[in-house]
Image (cartoon, rainbow, N blue to C red; front, side, top):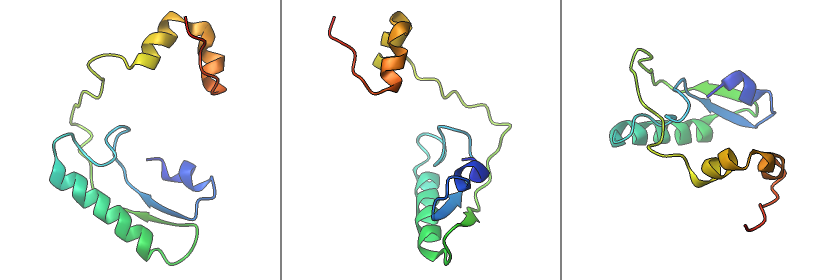
Length: 100
């Protein structure tokens, strides 16, 4: 999603795409586009000859398109942390909360 940032981590190969976060493969219910992006990414990763090389996938995104990416309701962990914000450090340290 952010090729320069991802490349800076030292990954061996990168298939980059300029899509919004949460829509890496395309719009919901657009199976044809999702499959094309997935196939393009797999093909690029197989064909990249040198470690560290970046291939930009040939898929354009219409950034004027307004897409609601908000979930219909908060995930359980988000609801929990909203009610128990002091548990956030434990969440980041991967320490499960104690049962209430």
